[in-house]
Amino acid sequence: MFEIRCCLANTGLSMKRSFTILLFGLLCSELLAEEWKLLPGEFPLNYEQVTELTADRTLTFYDNGQSRFSPEGAYSYSYPDGDITTFGVIDVRRDGKVCVNFRRGEHKCYLLLKSRGLILMLTKEGKRFPVKLELEF
Image (cartoon, rainbow, N blue to C red; front, side, top):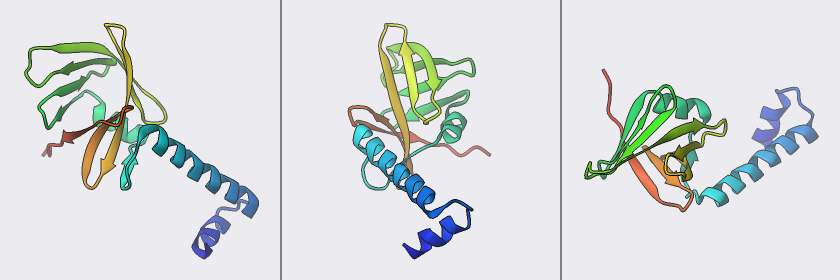
């Protein structure tokens, strides 16, 4: 508690306001964890991280499925066998969620997470899909 007080004292905020902000942040984290079934050690990426990871890129999953993100907001997902591809439009939200409006009328949101050195795509139902990351030189 002493370290928190020291850090908050340097911000120029009153202790009561600082405590309110801290409490609000903790409650929001708990709600996000409950809503999205986060496990200990999983941390959602923020808006900037998500846009950097998805901007004009293809994310390949360990089952070899691929999510493609175009700069204009077009999205496609190719299933691992390569026979079926679904199309839609993405919306990266300010809270870091990636939401897709599929052409077939379905709407889904995903959360990109950091977990023990991995990047995962989490569904609302709690399914986790690890992303293969490649180094670019």
